[in-house]
Structure formats: C-alpha cells, structure tokens
Image 1: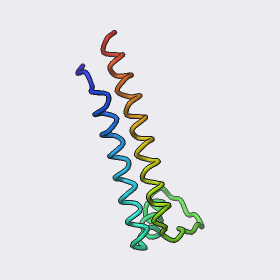
Image 2 (image 1 turned 60 degrees about the vertical axis):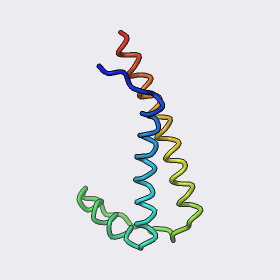
Image 3 (image 1 turned 90 degrees about the vertical axis):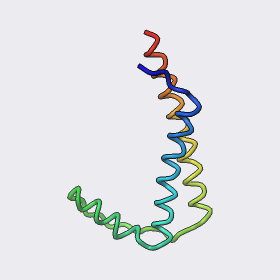
Image 4 (image 1 turned 90 degrees about the horizontal axis):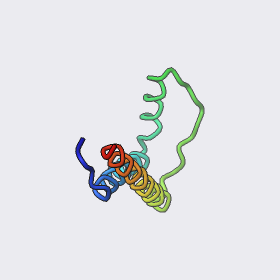
Amino acid sequence: MQHLNVRRTALSLGLFVGFLHLVWSIIVALGWAKPISDFILGLHHIQLSYTIAPFSLGTAIALILVTFISGYVFGLIFAVGWNMCKKH
C-alpha cells in the first residue's frame, strides 16, 4: 500500500467536493436545478413537492466553503487512517 500525503489528499478531496458544489450553484443560478433534480429523483422513483430557493451569491459562497472544509477534514481523516493501516 502506498503512503498518502495527508495534506494533498485532504486538499484534493476538499477541492473536489467544493467544485461539485460550485457546479451546483451555477446550475441553480441558471435556473436548471429543478428540472435536473426532478430527473434524478425520478430515476429513483421519487416524486416530491419542493421548491428551489432563488440564487443567492452569499449562500453559494457559504455552501462552497463549508463543503470544501468538510471535504478537507474527511480527506485528512481518510489519509491518516490509510497511513495507519499501512503500518500494521
């Protein structure tokens, strides 16, 4: 098993999930969120009555930051755990 660089792994996962939520924020801003959500939920045989809130730049930035930080923390935990398993 290869040793993982903890900071690189954490940064990679943080950037990945942050990027996914940047894309989601763009989808919301373009007004495509409801049809895409309906399509994906339909694939799972789910019908819900819900509303997509109007786009807010502040909310989008908060979403991206929170998911980046969460991804970073989970990436860090994963890399540390991986490296610990490698030693045993």
